Length: 430
Image 1 (cartoon, rainbow, N blue to C red):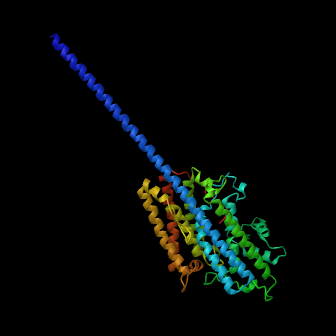
Image 2 (cartoon, helix red, strand yellow):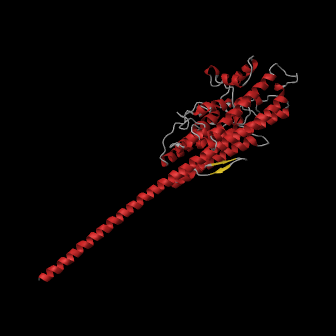
Image 3 (cartoon, rainbow, N blue to C red):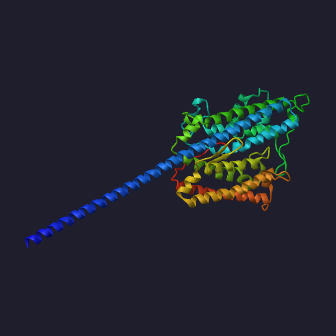
């Protein structure tokens, strides 16, 4: 009997030992699985952080490319303007107009970078001689609407026309329409006022408005040339400043836009916020919707040259560039880390919704561009504004606006998927 008890005790002890070993294995395996899960999460966070870093860096490269192309185009514009002023012929005026047109493609794509936000607020940007803010700089380069009467008054005056005068008179009397500098001031000087309403035809300024051979029809030809030169020279200087602010060297230079952007924890938030603002507040509202709803050709942005079709098309390219991480020109071919890839890795349905919307809007924007650029019977945006409700191009433009408004919802959902902060992209200029 005693032997049996001993054997039972041994068996019980072995069972207890086995259970303890089994429990230890379970605990060890649980700890191992938990560790693996934590490591996997850390790896995913690390991969996300690495992806975001590349996206932001690529976006800065796109900004530099767009501003650099704009600067190059402005230098060509400056050259043609100088040639025209020296010899004001119709051929030289046409060359200057062509150079103006060439600047619209890269500059409009750069406007996705223009909104005051985390990269400028409290950044002390003007410490190195650069702009105090993007908004302040943009108001000097691309402000709109422009009251041409203010420029006409300056030309008719007696003050010496130079860059300083244009800067002092820009926004005079606290009137935002008193624009004297930038792209649209140059546009007005080259084309003059468009008196055709919603009918075909842009401004028709003759080369003789700048005559210097004694055949001037009034006493202001030389001063017109001085004004055109000053506005063009200032435009070159301003675009040079902004290209420098986004250059590769600027990324590692404290106090520049590029450095502030690539080092901000909210850079992705800013990118998405700028996409939303450009697509809805700007394109769907101010740049397209206002003119279509009011029927007023003065609501089109390139109202002197009738090149609004070109401007709005490339504004939309800026939205696409920000999403797909791309930019293309004769000088640059950029295709890198993108919001598109990041969103697709988080939520395929959200990516597909944004991608589908952008492709659809692109098709309509391309039709508007093609209508304005075709050789025979071109239809410019001011003509679209004047079309009846069933006009072919008007329906295309209205559908584009409708889809741009709907895109806002998809982009807001994208921001939720990426757990982004709502960044204020308010601005003063147009």
